[in-house]
Image 1 (cartoon, helix red, strand yellow):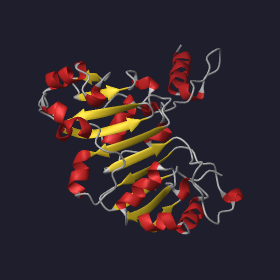
Image 2: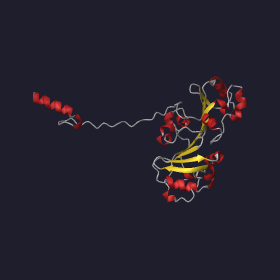
Image 3: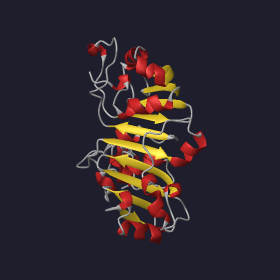
Image 4: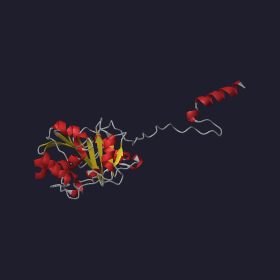
Length: 276
C-alpha cells in the first residue's frame, strides 16, 4: 500500500512530464496573445483615439490637434482647414464655433470633431438638427463630446483593430496623415526599383518643428528611400535634414516650409512613399 502511495505522489509531482498509464502529459503553458481593446479612449492622443471611429474600408486619415496647432503659432504644418470655420457665423447663434474644437479628423467619406469640455452639447445637437453648414446629417455623441459623419459605431469594424495602423500613430503632433498604401503619384529620384520593398500603410506626423514619417518596421530599403528623397527638389524645399532608422521604419526631418510640406502630403508627392 505504501509503495502505491509513493507512486501516486511521484506521478502527481511529475504531471508536467507525464505518467504511465492512460494519462497524457499536460500541454505546455502558452502565454495568451495580448489583445487590443479597440474602444474609443478620450485620453489617447487624437490620431490614436480616432482609429476606433474610422471605418475599416477608409483609405486615408488626416488628424489635426487644434491645441497643438495653436501652441505652434502657425509655424507647423496644418493639413486641413478648420471644418467649422465657414459656418462660424451661423454657429454663433448656438453658442459655439471653431474655437470649441479640440481636435478634428477627416477620413475617406467622413469626419470626426472632438469638442472641448464645457461645450453645450444640447446646442450642438440643435445645430446638427438644423443642418447648419457641414453639420447636416451628422451624429452627436453628447457623452463623449463628439460630432461625426460617416464614422463607424462598431470599433471591431474600425482601423483600431489593425495593429499595423495602430503602430503608425500615437505620438503628440500638430497634424498626422495616414495612408493605407504607397503613393502612385510620387517619384523617388535615382532609385533602383528592384531595391525597393513594397510599401503598405504609412504615416507622417508634424510637430512644431520636427517631422516623423513611419513606413513600417524592419525595412531593408529605408536608406534607399531616404537617399532618393534627398534628390527631390520639392521635398528639399519643404523639409530639411533627413535621418533613418530601419529597425523602426522611421524617417526624421525638420520643417523648413510648412505650406510646401502640406502641399506635398495633399498631392501625394512625398518621394519616400513611392510605389515600387
